[in-house]
Picture 1 (cartoon, protein in one colour):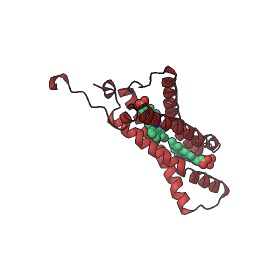
Picture 2 (spheres, protein in one colour):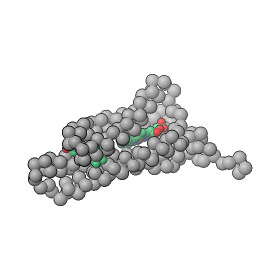
Picture 3 (tube, helix red, strand yellow):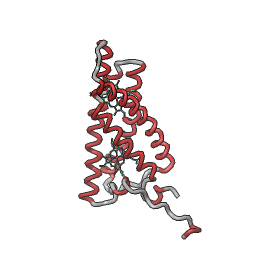
Picture 4 (cartoon, protein in one colour):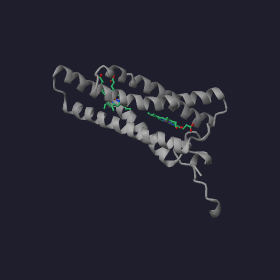
Length: 173
Ligand code: HEM
Ligand code: HEM
């Protein structure tokens, strides 16, 4: 039986959620080195060693995020997601919208980065919108998770930390 039917996320979904979140934070914190590297390349100037390393890391971490998100979407199709614990339909809709926007950004942002590097530098302008867009969504999303945990005291955050117990097959019961 899928973990969703037992009310939680699969271990793979939880692992990918936190790994991708950590990598996105890395991209947001150190992304400026990529802007420095791009500007220096356009003007034929040298960049510092740290910016060079961080810009290379930005490139490869971004591609890793794209691959991990593809795995995550496949896992989502395979396992689905547990039903929201909130009963207010407007809140449930807002949560689903934020999750869908996250998935959209997680694909569009690395793709626009690749386009900026390999096809058209002007895509860099659009790519840079990643920073405010992700920050707004993360504040809303983490705020909602903490509100569920500390105010409503339900299992919303707990089920993204601990996988649902796989249900025993009928023969083992
Ligand atoms: C989810 C993945 C990614 C996130 C969250 C992200 C985020 C960012 C951020 C925050 C900046 C700096 C913006 C600023 O300081 O205003 C940036 C710049 C940049 N990123 Fe990414 N990035 C990602 C993936 C990629 C990938 C895969 C590539 C290319 C292979 C890439 C290429 C670039 C380039 C070229 C710039 C400089 C743009 C310019 O100067 O016009 N990024 N990115
Ligand atoms: C860049 C950072 C993050 C991204 C991209 C992200 C993305 C997502 C997405 C797309 C989902 C929906 C999963 C699905 O049903 O398919 C989700 C669920 C969840 N996230 Fe995040 N997340 C991030 C950071 C965080 C943080 C910092 C927290 C906690 C403080 C958090 C807590 C949760 C929880 C509790 C759920 C499950 C919601 C539920 O079961 O209804 N996330 N996240």
